[in-house]
Length: 403
Image 1 (cartoon, rainbow, N blue to C red):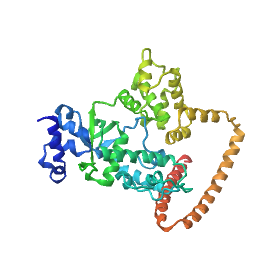
Image 2 (image 1 turned 180 degrees about the horizontal axis):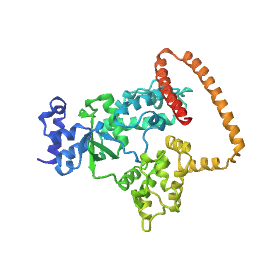
Image 3 (image 1 turned 135 degrees about the vertical axis):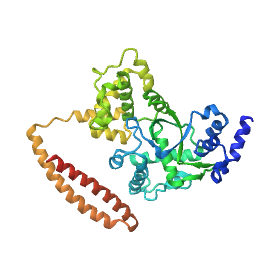
């Protein structure tokens, strides 16, 4: 049977997959049943290609804790750890916060995923001047969410052209590359489940994602894919550089992530270029893997590992460039250090301001709740309940620190 005839056979059997999957051979079921798009046809037509890819359940897959790109805003992963059981909770909270932003109350994720009419689409289809709310710049949280939603919509429309890569650990898998694609599959399964009928008429099971299984996480292969896509922000690039340097010097020389106080502290172990010099003969390899052209660029990204913690998180969430981060850091460094006496006074003043701010926050919140329409109050209630839980944890931290 020719390759074209095999493709036609698979296309004709698409609907059988949903109605009676046992009627198809296992390789064809897997190839057309988990969203590979055109690649599924190539895989089913060539056994040697297919053997390199497996259909893996998305709930069996866990993120790699030291991967360089952070797909979820930090304040959300402060509340929910990023693991399969929490993905929907994270997405619901994320969407809820976006809905409460000015002009975003009508956010409908399903319409975005289906490519149907949305408020965002309507704005580019009209010649009218936008309203004040419509003309507001997109928040970084909204922009990050839309990147993920747009990826999911693209996969649903066109299929997944590039499987993720995983490392098998016992009864679970760890992501080497493809965290955002994995999250996109979670979105599609959450909203459409298995047996979803795509725009081209094919049936897809979103509970499984095509993946290549590799023997171990290779930070150099990871860097190659990330830089081929050229979409890492400055902080992610600093993380990537750190991982490559650790690999060059030997992982046994560094503390594991769970043993470090923060995730930044883990990457900052190679921040000192005098101690952790680039090994002789590895400079060109490192530049190539990072997609950089000069040694000064490497030094600038290594310097980001020493940023203040709050600026590190801000730079990651807001996708600030290396140049922007360098300017902000220089401005912070120019501030004169206060004396010990002034510092003590400032601490006392800060406590007084904190108490005053808490009282003002309470009064302002009462007024805002009374002004909000009835439909939005359940959303605000959920937000307040979550913040109360976080405040209770803060109280526990205070209690522990004083014992």
